[in-house]
Length: 82
Image (cartoon, rainbow, N blue to C red; front, side, top):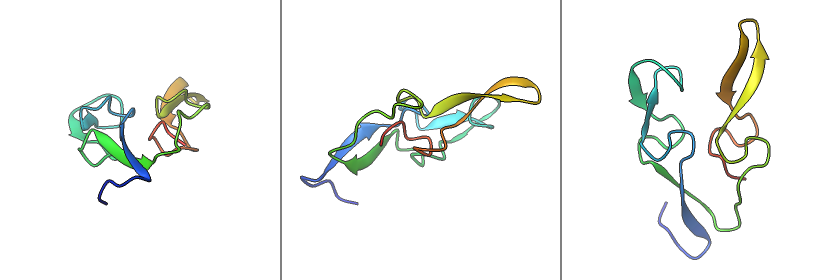
């Protein structure tokens, strides 16, 4: 998607602009970031702002069977923007 006056390049907060994340999204062997596809940034609508639920991180803490875990934000799908 070419950048124009309605899109803006935003950092991928899920991978911290590295383009790679741990195997499960947090730990393990590095894999290509599933959110930015390895680019480290995203082209989004220029009116986007940091997502309030995950505070722009793209991840949230959830209580699971093994205690609290970090999971992909269900609202922004890991981008950190809305």
